Length: 575
Image (tube, rainbow, N blue to C red; front, side):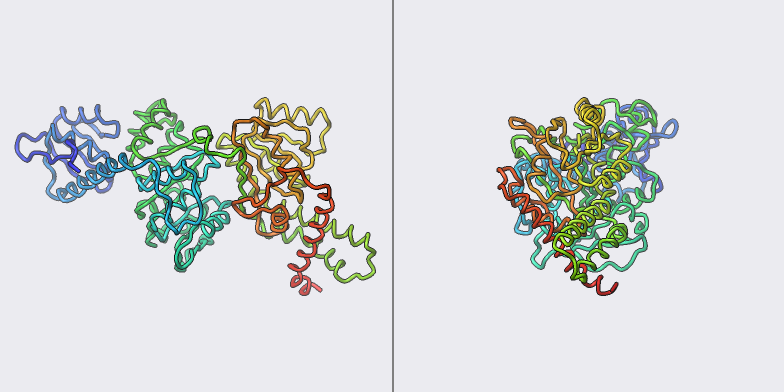
């Protein structure tokens, strides 16, 4: 490729208007020279800064180096002897970046299907997302929630084999990322995933992908950058929207040590200047210049945080290969009417163990008391099943709330379904900042109507509904349905989904089934025909057979038998 005119070598002869030197402490190039140069630089380039008359500073970013070279073609400068090699290296980097951007512009809109290392299929818009990530080594994938950012990121790892990779994720998504990597990434010798635990660094075992959550970054700040990670993925990168923390500092050091860095977020925040500047600065240091120059030129005042024209900033980020965002409306023709996703989340194991102590006592009775009549045994089995289901729901309630909080912060309108009143009460505590309304069967008809009205009229974006109290409700304003607890009946879930989805509706409804590895969820998934990340049954979309009630009872009894088998060892220890 021919070198762009603005990146050609500066003529060596003729008048020079000042000097150019590198400030190692500030990591910037500094012009000291005639006012005609320094004042022009400050007027022309928003990213240019200066401290007093006769001085102008340019951040040492490859895009800004191109601007500086263009200026020097008109106003040549003497480069300090000690910095000439550094300048040549910076100029070559800027030329390589210009060539890369030109090649990216010529690339096909869709990437070829990923290699055999990816065990899955991608929709057309997801293949376009993969092509974008392949063309841009440092970028923000800001697709709306539910459009498959996770699977596109894993496809990128499969396509590039840029391993070992480090994934930084919110605490409640660690387990889901581990599952998705094991499901979609198919390496010749199997994928090795290691989840980093604790704040105290330890020797990391050999693995292909490492997963750590944001709260642990500060403890590993000095250790992780030296581990040789080739790719770095920040899920929900808006977690880094505030600078000045150890977490942010650790993320910045990590980013500078990796060759490929991707941020994932369904909630781009480029109307808040400080927040988007912080996020982009993690992905590509000084891509938007310094904070002072960014706030001065893009925001409503020097050092202030509101971007005056967020649409212009968004277009700038897209044009420069820094951000790709698709909304559900953009890709609606490619989406099915309903998208059902099973997402594995974490749970509070200590809370679960405490809540199931009474269950252990009743299981002991079922196992040892041969005098129980069939009716008493059936009643005891039902109590065991209900109490263990409630323990499962309560143990994961905080993680369900964290997941729903992310949806709400992304602008979604959520129906949150659960079964037990105690679980609903936990949601009320965890999500009170969002002013949720409740339809749980404990309300009068007037209260139920008021709750539905508040949600439909936009006075709240969160409506919590009991699984068995959903009949007759019309809540089509919802864009997401979340099942924090499961029911034995597929028809119950289908009916709950239909509170938000109607025949003829053009939108694509996103339905999340949040499950945890402990407790009743595993057996209920099997009964419903659910597998992680996919549905194998029609979930009650067809009329259910008349024997459904009896089937549910069989499922519950089988669950108790499985529970007894799983807890045999614990029972032996407590007898």
